[in-house]
Image 1 (cartoon, rainbow, N blue to C red):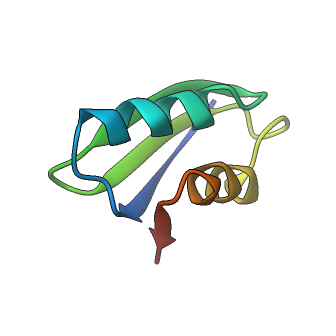
Image 2: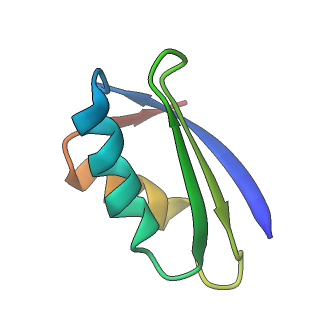
Image 3: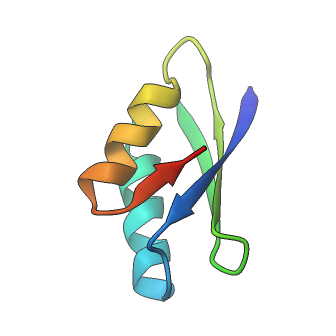
Amino acid sequence: MEKITLNVEGMSCSHCEKTIKKAVGELVGVTGVNVDLAQKTVTIEYEPVKANLENFKLAIEEEGYEVVG
């Protein structure tokens, strides 16, 4: 397992949190998603042979949020 933390702009409420958790959590290889609205971060625990950064970015951006950095 590996963990990655992404900076995500546009998150402001529990609906945002649920939306991102659902979108990223449904990806193959993702075992955990934690959203921190105050820090504007999304921490993802995943299996690197099944998931990668590009998958995470695409899932988040398709929901209308911006991955920065």
